[in-house]
Image (cartoon, rainbow, N blue to C red):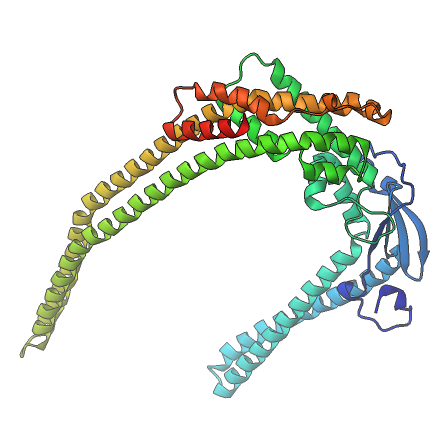
Length: 461
């Protein structure tokens, strides 16, 4: 049963999950401008279009049509669940009071009659169960009330605001691009809004590239961090281009050609990253193996004082038992034997701790040395990674700048039908080969990594 099937006279439980039905679709205006101001209030962004049979149609930002429970239906449901919540809470408090009173009367009845205490205990347990049941019902009613009080268009409003705040890749990761003529929870943004967000991300990336080009000095670590971010979220990825532009879109066709070069660049960067990730994993595994061995050696070393303590405790226990079982032993002698046994246990415990203290200090120092060794090795690998990835910095700037120039200038030429092969990007391997030669000249690179770069150079050039 849906909410549209419920009448005012129906005895309906107003379960949110059973009768709540939301439909999200896009308006038919395909040439709509992007929403440049998403800071408006909820009342300014959501407009009631129609309300019929407890179903309301709401227009969000004049772009997305949301159908769900009307305001009138939500008021009815809220009143229903408020009564249930208040009733459950009242009976819950009443049950708690009766439960406490029954327990108190049962305690008093112990001194009068056992049957009165038993009756009080049974009554207290029963009322406690009822109080727990009413508390659960009140919590469920409050949960239903919270759901019904939330406007059906609230999720759409929040998603649209988050997408405009976080940008295109948030839309891509959550698949918020809508489709005309469909009803889907993914109908959050119009396709042209997605295209606008993509182009904004392209412009922002170009601004960042321009800033990097103007910097006089960039450290290897800064280059590596920028390259990793450049590869992770880049508008030149084929997935981003195909998501932003429709099939056969002129701008999309231009960028798809550059996407091939970007993918080649990304593969080369991934090769370097994977190489150093493997080296880092090897160091971490070696450190873990050493720490595990130290833990085993520690256990064996600590077991010896424990063994002596156990043997001494056992001897003290036997001596105490012999004195207890001796014929004619007085109470004072037995008490002295017991005290002597307790004193011996404490002495053995202290001696064991004293014996184990230098052992723990030694192995703590060994473990600290292993962790220090691990940190130093990882730092060396990180520095090698920075040096190895630094030469990829300038090709990335050149690649994106070339793509941006084609995206801006060659679009009109393609519309006119005069786009030639000269406008397409060169194979990235040509640029990569030039920078790999610089890379191979670095003396700080390891022999293994240098051999891998030579193989890559032969394949690219």
